[in-house]
Image 1 (cartoon, rainbow, N blue to C red):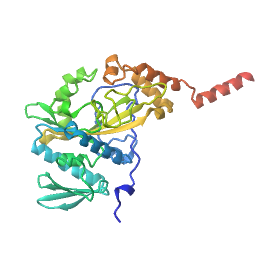
Image 2: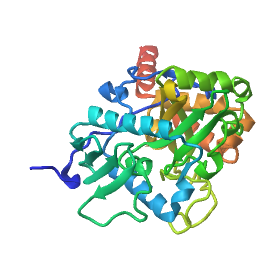
Image 3: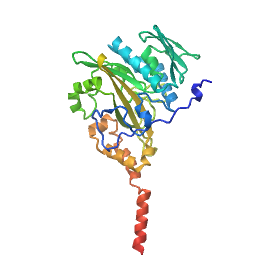
Image 4: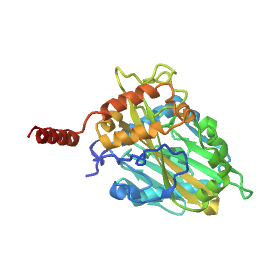
Length: 357
């Protein structure tokens, strides 16, 4: 009997803590894709499916219903690049998750991809243009705009594509971003890599080397990198202009309240996959949110987070929206960190007993 989305068992989410050195670093931080980061074979997968799938999907559907063009944009995305990346996504999904994705029909003129998690079958023509969707329930509103939109709604990652001209010019050719971390697809589409990262405090040196970075991303790899920040909200969609009709009823970013502390570590796992023949690269962006109460209870992790915060410049704190709450956050984290750990308390008790002898 086929499993339905309701009874499909999904694994626990992977765990990433990219602050092992206790330093905030704005460099590219490119690592070879597939290296062991403590999550077994999950680290070798481009796309990661876990217990949060249906939450991520609902976030995407809600964002699209608000206004699709706010979260999905393309600009000068060539047919060649589009076909190559769409084919790659389909191949990786069926390779990495054969239990969830199957090619139920494949001919010279048509490909049909079935996703067991969404219970949708996406139908493409021989140029991977979306021609239809089979489902036994009402279509999302709006229905899928094109192939990229449809595939993005079958996965937990957000997507971005960077293209490069033969003359070296680069630009963001596509962005499907429903779990935004305080940036907007509308603003970044069409921008160069350098312009996209211009607001990043402390990244001046990397901006001068923008062409080198883009050439590396497009022609080498694949790579993986991480970005992180702190936020008082657990919501995945933190678009700089939130939907006021959603759970957030204000356009002001929630502040950290030390009397009712709510703080989350937000980590982005970014996979950068090169398409050198098409002079392009695919970025997948998967967001993980961890309650800082858990980190605060782990002495080693808490110390590294405190150290990383202390290493930030004023400009970096402002860029990360932490400048107003830095002192309160630091105090909250440090207060718990100052408590003696069980091992320290035990050593102190043994020392007291020795001195009493």
